[in-house]
Amino acid sequence: MGTQEDIITFNHVTFKYNSDEPLALNDVSFGIPKGQWTSIVGHNGSGKSTIAKLMVGIEKPIDGSIKFYDQIINQQNLDNLRQHIGIVFQNPENQFVGSTVEFDVAFGLENNSVSYDDMQTIVPKALEDVEMLDRADYEPQALSGGQKQRVAIAGVLALDTDVIILDEATSMLDPAGRSELISLIHRLKEEKDVTIISITHDLTEATEADYLVVLNKGQVYQTGMPQDVFNDGDGLTEIGLDLPFSIRMERALLGNSHFITYEGLVKKL
Image (cartoon, rainbow, N blue to C red; front, side):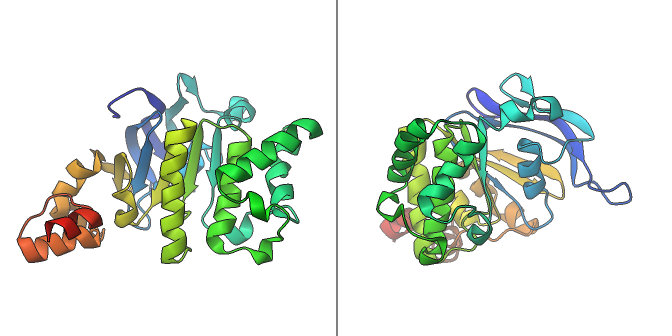
């Protein structure tokens, strides 16, 4: 479990998509620390995307419970839940619903019956938060993949959610776009008092997080701070995960297997 108050908790959650299929999640328990960046990592088929769907009520467990604070997530409170938890998906091309950037950010507000006058204040502020205000009147096709993801995050920020889930949100971005988005995540976490949950198979991205949940074959393999989790480098490799470049290089050159960032490797060398 997390080392401080948990904003979302999974309690012995089991889930399968169809009765004749194997379990996607099997007796999964963990907590998401409030106000931190938690990265949920695992190889394809480990259950990490299922976790995201359960968090926002797209799917429901067949056993166990999921809580937002002390409130169980179920079909009866989904409308209330979605005022607190927002999600940004993998493909930015599929996320735009407005004809321009500002109309896209306003879309969610309209669905929540926010007044036009209030939107005139909220939309520019959300775009400013993600450094996209100067592109408010741009059409989607004029934006890069990273810029589209920024707009998607602005749409979540406009709704003033407590939690932002990023479901493989960096996987389709080039290195520059990925780096910019990770920097934005760090800044939003510090400035907005928001809880970040990133779903990813990229352990290099996961080194940036405050807390990790590692999944393997539908079960929790390990949880903890990155430096603790990555000290089990051999175990992570055995379950099919590629260690970050910085850790692989340290092991190859220095014979160590401890957690180290890319910047830390440069300094050490």
